Image 1: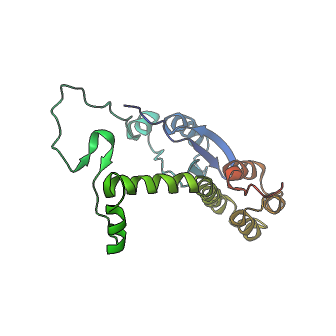
Image 2: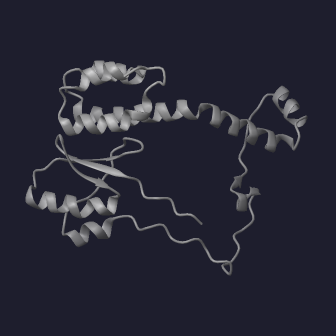
Image 3: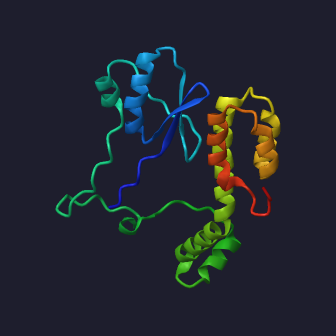
Length: 202
């Protein structure tokens, strides 16, 4: 089974970017930083979502590393006891859950080749493909906003930058953040790069 890559994180001390990479790689760097400067205000962000990540840096480096989440365990071997059978087709990743629809929806699904489950999966996959660009833009804007709100919420032009970000207006956004601290500006721009409308000219 494929093990997903650990999330990429970026750490700031105040307005200065001090580390980037997966959590285990950041831990030692940040522990060394707070040992040198106990008053450092560290904020860590998940690059994909913009959400803040908690990291307890108290104690020794060994204490810090000991508290980190362990790596994902390997999948059970073939000779492992089989789990109890559940609804759906778990070997294919198919899981049964309740879906509530109107009678006319069920009537339509009943006429589709393969039945209701196959038809619903096709509809979801079609919607995912059709909305992929829009979803990526929305997620990029939300991630960038979370970071800029935490690091530059009191910066000049923040409100204007926020409106330009969610409107997909790259040129206006760039003008609003031009005077922000360099590390903050560059990181927010990096997170927002997938959030611009294709029709927006930079």
